[in-house]
Length: 200
Image (cartoon, rainbow, N blue to C red; front, side, top):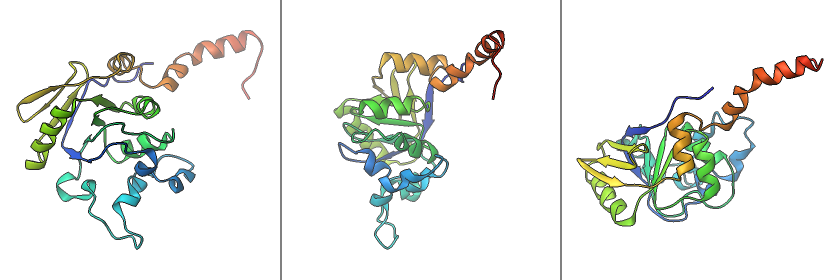
């Protein structure tokens, strides 16, 4: 039961500067009490976006020109820190489908891939140039293409990298391991019936 392949994402992008943006910054620990992931978007970068009185600090993702952005451009070691899967869930539920960074923390990368989120690594010089393009013209459409390992924006192409196993999973539609488990459910039920087991 393969899911739809994820070959590319196109949309506007928001630059979130800085290296080592950890999962506690992405989604503070107090938001992990949620029973489901449904409302996690409200906690995305909460402490960096809001002062203690709840007023906005002026974080890039709150800027009017970045509303509806699907792509994040950021620095090295994105998603480091704790292994909370809430971090990519919060990003996904806030509408982000791709992250361009210098590098990614391994567990964050894996958790993001199982959501069909594209996490591609781009060299520093190219990220710096892309950042300049986006800051000059926030409406620029950015395409993250994992099939061809390219990011396209404003008529330019930038090479990117993604782990080969993740790329294959995304391109074949087998990026969600739970989906793969469910694919075998009919055989499990048939074996259980043959053994005389009954579903509870």
